[in-house]
Image (cartoon, rainbow, N blue to C red; front, top):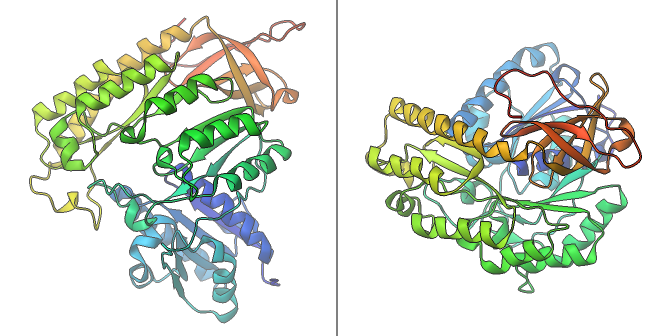
Amino acid sequence: MQTDKPNGVFISTYGCQMNVNDTERMLSLLEMINLEGVATPEEASVIIINSCSIREKAVHKVHSEAGKYRRLKEKNPELKIGVGGCVGQQEKNKLLSDVPVLDFVFGTDAIDTLPQIVQEVREKNTRKVATKLTPKEPYQIETLVRNPGVATFVNITKGCDNFCTFCVVPFTRGREKSRDIDEIINDVKRLIARGVKEVSLLGQNVNSYKSTQGDNFSKLLRRLAEETKIERIRYTTSHPKDFDVELAHIMRDYREKIMEYIHLPAQSGNSEVLERMNRGYTRKEYIAKAHMLLKEVPGAVLSSDLIVGFPGETEAQFQETMSLLDEVPYESLYAFNYSPRPLTKAAKLPDQVAEEVKSERLSRLLAKHRDIAFNLAKKYAGQTLQVLVEEYHVTEDRCFGRSTQNKSVHFQGSRDLIGKTIAVRVTEAYPSTLYGVAEISGVAEISGVAEISGEVIK
């Protein structure tokens, strides 16, 4: 496929890591019709908003962002503007009628046909919607990344079968499908040949992976560790109900490759709320599973998602979410106000919590976790961590990488360290960011202390 029209495509991306990965796939596919990624919408002949619909504000953002491009289209009538991702899948034709500036809308199963969609819209000067889900087709893709760098994402599942009452994912990404295990192994081997040192396995419910041959997630991790030369393996997002001792033992037995960071979304600390959410576990069961992981995987680092103000949540039930932080040592926390989403059962539940109550509870939860996170970070001060260097910032003469615990680590270094695993002694520790000095054998220590504001742990 070829086109002689201007060759700039700008993609605005927000949402989960799967959306980020989808954007890379879009850019790789659009190169087939000679569309190259550009840095600003002003340079583009095609603009795509790769959207998320997990929270209500994301839908509003699509309308707002598309409106900002109206002036660009007035200056250049040939400019084509589209929306993809979960909002595209959810809103379908409604988006075209509500946002006249849009030319095309495509869903999560239409990404691989994006070159044809864009070409048709440009050549025929028509508007198009492509949002049909394909539940019966097997999930077969190859990771398409233009410049994978040191670390990259690999999708292993898509969709979700859990139907949590607050979540729109089963409606926007369809029912759960898993890729063939050999296809994933070969995919990772190709990425290694391109210089990739670390892969993050992605899925809405990654540890429910089950290939058509019956292989589970534990077997996939073991085969990746044994059959490929990948240096590091991460994964997200796991579901507590699918996390078992077998998976914990695989992480323990292959810890030289499988990183000890585990994102284990709780969503609430109250069993009644969890039941209304359809999460499939109680507070007691969740805490027991978290403690099992901390015991079976020495040095395990946990993070979580929590929703505040779910319909019917009382102050007493919220206090159980607060006290969950005393039971499970979350080093990172992603907490949000409940947002009603179309098609979900929770949106129709009685006793919706007032917005001001949600916001006040969220502030209390985040304040409590902030104190806990600073205390947990103290243990890193003085430790030497293994850091895979991903970037070099020339203006600061500083390297950036991540430790096995998924901590961002900054230290002074040089460009030739990119792609190498460096021992870094931590000199300053924050909950999500660490600063230190590289301990390179045979070379003088490289100082990396940074001037930053706020509380410092030494």
